[in-house]
Length: 373
Image (cartoon, rainbow, N blue to C red; front, side, top):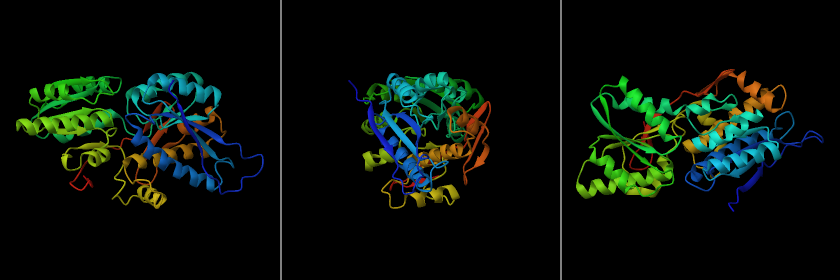
């Protein structure tokens, strides 16, 4: 039987909390800690913990420390649902934080909606997440990510193919693309190739895509499958001498791990959408604060850990402003937040409008693995 309980973490507390005021604020997380996105979640959680540790060290929220309880769902919607019930019904968490993936997040929301438990900073840009009355995303939507790609490629005629993950992440975006491209007459959608989420053999998909002779491909895939696709398309185009199309990837893919794993085979110049400002080079106050907080911690400075840090900051803002530290009190606090500039990165929440951010950037990595805009 899959061992879903991975760890429970309580930040080390240097602040002398008074007796009777130290009951922790329990925040639950079910996320992929062992499967296709585990490397990203490791960085996300590491930076989130750094921020929460700082808050706890300064006295916590209303004299109470924040405690994170992590459960592993291995990107399984079924396990995510089981974990959500345990966190909500048995652990009595105040909120769910940092779920990962569209299918698992939807499964969590089915449980959280019924119990009126807020789900803060889900790592998904799916439309369904934004429709939930208890979900409060921080990152921009996948539709905004795709629009950013379309605007970039629309300056000249483009034959576009798509690699589509065969799930609730990939299918809605494939349908959105077919409709949206009516507004971009220079882009012709010539092929969509589908694959199962945990697929790492992309020979058939690459054959299908290359046969359509695209000059651009949008890869809607998880980090592991995207890397497998990139390796295979490099292999086939080198073997045949064909021109490799430009490959666009979304923010849930992983430019850093691809570069690290592929090294000299990593194809530079391929764009990735990102939903946060440059974590390395920007001088925005939020990014400077993040870099200073992680200095000497052994945590990579990258988009993955930056998202965890920002997500934890939004969570703490809502906890600090809540009239009561209850589930309903936290929902009300989020919906009363309005527009907040965190220091060069803006989020917006209101009753009936859990927008989060609309920030999308388009970057690539150069031959040394550095971010290029």
